[in-house]
Length: 364
Length: 145
Image (cartoon, rainbow over all chains, first blue to last red):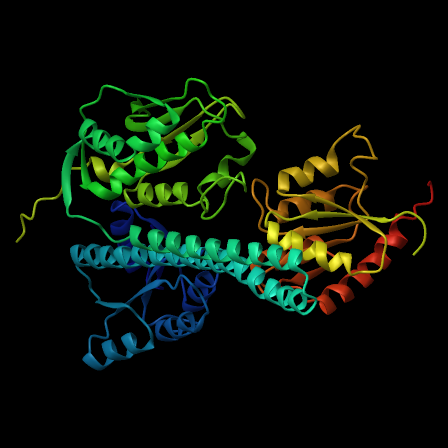
């Protein structure tokens, strides 16, 4: 992590920098308060700063006050450093906006421990900001897509009124048709939104299951789909054990298999293969079909919420968005490969979070 | 407005919304031909198709563009229109369900002529069409034609 040390005393600065560099941090130094204030205003400023109280140009307390007045999504973690060990000084520092306080002369182990607390806070904050941005995007997409059928309803109600006044039976029928479709669409979108909102919550307790076992369950749940489309399913040899929420993990394969069945196109001998390959030192799961394929230009869009490549296909475009969210819940990545239209599709994904053994409650 | 009917390309994946545009245009007293495509890729194919028959795919005088589209979104379609020196002069009107979303801001910075927030009532739509039909009519009168 990048750490700013603001300290005018050479010895103290050198010791601080030495300890932090040994712990693997990237250290930037400021020799006075004004330089520290300047450094902390930069867009790529350090996420954690250790600020001495007594410095030329601007004292540490003033630096902390000014930094806290900056509008930002990523406020830095600030540790005040001082020989001023009075309780009232500590309170002044914390009230000005410091996160923590370290007395000089400091103990290297204590410094490391306090910096570690700061690192955890910064990481948590970054994670939260990321989640927040994702949530904002999600809300925007969802509200936009939900508004669409409402626009249709309100406009066609106006048409219906006119057409009833004119007693135009043909037009009235047509208006009603569009109104019904819009209401159905609305219900479907809301059902799907509820479904997505449930993903973050675990559906069952974490447990261990083998890959063949899980796949067997999934295939049983989509047996109707598979039979209806006459799909041959092949599952590769693999006795890997997965740990996690059985229902959520199963939903990954379930959605991918349903998706494959849906986009078989005109394939006379529809086939789905699933399994695991080792790639770059980690297991990569795959679900491959020989169906209608995806134009590589549109690869990135397939996982977006309510994005459909074919507006005429059934559903709202939620299946792959769900898959992506579950994969990410297990710290994994998902991507798609297809040589293009008619060439079949292969989804690859990793699930690092489901490969680790559940942690023992040893500390209790 | 004299001569050939104005050619309008409507890019809209929602069939009900396309029907709304069609009905608004039917009440509008200017000769026009409407071409409807359902996604961004179809729009790009329509606009950039080389050697296509101009009687089947005539160059539009006006484009009505939904922003949220399958395959290629409206912003990307607009970007490609504005990067092409033959197409960038075609007045492009953005259709959107929200007046303050980030995508509308992006559309404006790319040079969308104007936008229509859905639902489009007939008065609003008429006003929009009057301005843009006028523009379309002026702009299509190219010196070499």
